[in-house]
Length: 232
Image (cartoon, rainbow, N blue to C red; front, side, top):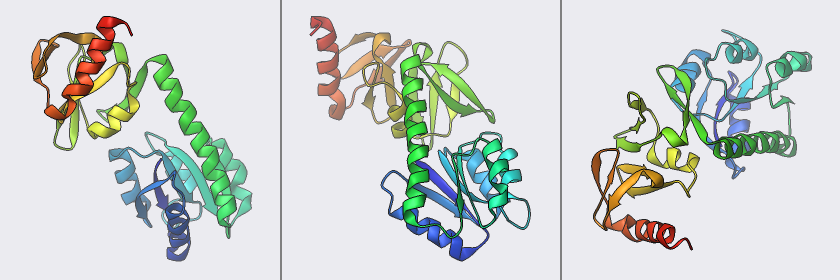
C-alpha cells in the first residue's frame, strides 16, 4: 500500500517513518510537516493510506482529511485521545495515541490491509476500476476498455468515449486489471484480450489500431491466445 505520513513534530514523523520501513505491506511515498503541500501531493498522486497527526498549527488533521477531494484510508496519530470519536466519524481505519509501539502500529496497518484487499477484489470481481481524471474519481468498466497506452508519466485509456489521460504508471494500472482479461504486449501498450481482432507474433489489431508486439511479450501473448483457441 502506498502511504503518506503527515505530522508537524519531526520526532513523531521519524518514528512513523521507521515503523513504515519495518512493514513490508507499506511503501512510503512522501512525508510532510505542512498540510498544504501534503494536500497538493495527495490530490496529484495515487495514495492508499495516510498517517495523519490531529494537532497541527495551520489546520487539524480532522479538518485536513475532511477537506480532501479523494480520501485515502486514514490512520490518525495524536497525543489527545478525546479526538477519537471525531476521527472515527470520518471513517478512519484506526486511531493511534502517542506514544505507540510498533505492535500497535502494525495492528492498525493490518486493518487497512484487509480493507485494501477487500476493495481491490471487489473492483476485480465487479468488473471495474476507479481512476482520477479531471480532478475527480471516475469508474471505468473493464468491458469498455479498448486500449491502454503509455505516455511518459501518464497513461491514456481508450474507451468508446473520449480517451482519458491519467497520471498513473503502466505497472500500477496492470496491477488493477484481471490477468485473464488484459495483457501487456509492449512497453507502451496493454490490450483487452477479447478486443483483439487479429494477431501474429509481431503485431495485433485492436480498436482500429495496429499495435506492435515486443519480443519480451510474444510468447506470453501466443500462449494466452492459443489457449483460448484450444479451450484448454
